[in-house]
Length: 226
Image (cartoon, rainbow, N blue to C red; front, side):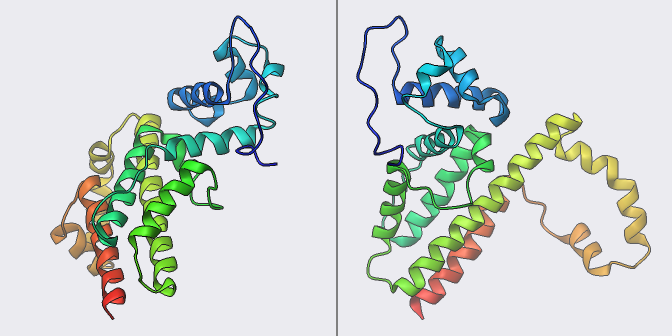
């Protein structure tokens, strides 16, 4: 029986009452503060002021705990809008915002489908918005948006982590490599790259995300109309 179907132990009088929700919220607090390395059943138990063995009545493994954490964050992802394009945009932007609030989410999405109730509710909202569009278009279109978001947020979170590790933000890092890049481009070996560096748009993270998403949605729209 999967964790979402498995009943919780009956309540009992205790100095520190437990529930699956309280356990998951404690794990999310730890992960938000210090990343996934800070999450273990022992550390979560300590956060809640109970012994580790008490948690096993609610959660059998760390993998179950991670699944529950991801599903809890999906409660923050509620795609809305009129029509498929607005809903897909809402899905992408809401997922990105959730990953910015919970950096560890970027490490856990993009693999096998999430099947918890909140994850399924988000998927239902998206698929319902696709209306009567042919499923041969719907399935790869939604998959393409999800793949774009996963790639984009992982890149953004990787940049955040690099800034913390190096002590340099993106502008400072670019400045440190500027002389090398100018010398390299001056050789004439990379003319297309030089044109982009000198004349291309220099978008921030928000602009880059939205521009890429627009390209993707435009492509889906062409297929839907076609």
